[in-house]
Length: 323
Figure (cartoon, rainbow, N blue to C red):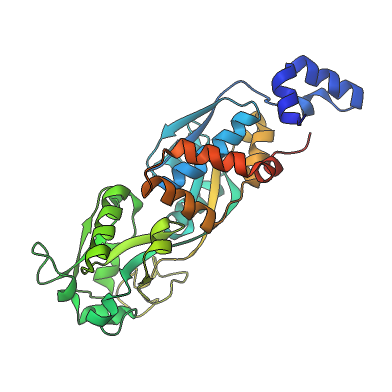
């Protein structure tokens, strides 16, 4: 029997006895260390919910009480600092690097390491649009073919379909800095954004939209990200950086890590849980397939999570610290 099953079936006294027989301090064997629930945040996109439910399922296997709390992606850092929230499973370098670094520097939030997924989120278009807007994926092509992407509400400007406002992709600042004849229309939700991208793709209609990976859509739809000037330190803060010496945000989004973050006080309350969270790893392809099973195939999220847990027991068991 695994330690997980042993602890759950025998209870604290049995674990205490096992620790005594092996000469280990009893405190190192008592998992869960507290009956206080660990509060994991749920943000407003499917992939983050999958990551969170996967980690929550592992913590439950370890014997912890888990609570899921709906939280705004950016505002959740306030709760992580105060301890009202405990764990956020997906902090993307592309959109929240500064918030993450500020929170960690203050000492109240821990950087819990990378998830194993690599983030790209930026302006995306279907491959067939390169015939209608020659010069793509170079961003400068958008200056000459904005009318191709125009809608009745944005004419003569093109429409850029952004994500939810809370995701903060700096689209308005970028449009101004690069003098692009586009207007931002926010989709409001991931479901609305994906529905419009899918509809346009099926009809081969013009669309320029916010998209990201890991996700099912870049796996299913042939397309490209617009090639903006490469992000670098200073792009968001220093007007003298980049192609427009009078404006910030004259670059694409950064690309890189997706990390976990946690309330610093939790390391003393649930040390084994925090080790498991640090050990969490999954890749873009695995995540994209699960998101597709939920958003495209219509399968319940928890069912998809449960199947992954059943099919990958060796993987998630390796996240659990040895006693």
